[in-house]
Amino acid sequence: MKNRPDLPEGLPKKERRKIKRAFYREQMNKQLRLGKLQKYGIIIAACLVFLAGGYWFIREASKPKPGEFVPTLGNEHIQNITDTHESYNSLPPTSGTHVNNKAPWGVSGSPIPDELQLHNLEDGGIMVQYNCTPDGDSQKEATDSAEGQDECQKLVAGLTAVIKKYKDKVILAPYPQLDTKIALTAWTKLDKFNEFNEERIEKFIKAYRGIDHHRV
Image (cartoon, rainbow, N blue to C red; front, side, top):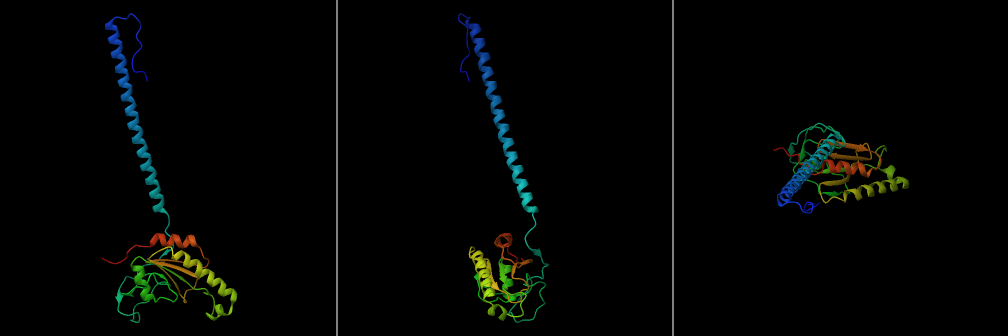
């Protein structure tokens, strides 16, 4: 951009001043126009970012959540797991009567009673439970079959690798009554399937882990 106007030789001072004033006025107007364009450009860019963010949020919020919804049975507390209470409405349970204690987070080698694991769910935990022989008549069927044992070990190893990514709020445990190989539960949420699917498990955990369900 030019800093001074081109002035013809021999031009009177009055004319020179007039040309200079017009030149500098035009330069100032150009700067003002440029400033406005930059301002509008920033506003437009900000609007586009806002719209893109809003679109992403709406798209994510409208995506279906993993698993299926199971109506709540409340969260009444009992003293002992042997105390009588109403039956649960899913297998494994996703809400209902439970004790005050919680099972340790992480990997459990033994089944966790329904009345105990439900308190973990109430605290925002996720239960990942399995049964290597959901269609078998007994656990002996898996014991007698080397192939069955190998498949079970692979399943447990895969599930364990996923669960160990989380320091808390997730438990892996066997569930002998399960009618599928794998079941994922959160409070009022259930997902059951037969083939190991790391992405499906991760999606469920990330969707519901850490959401507290205590009644205020």
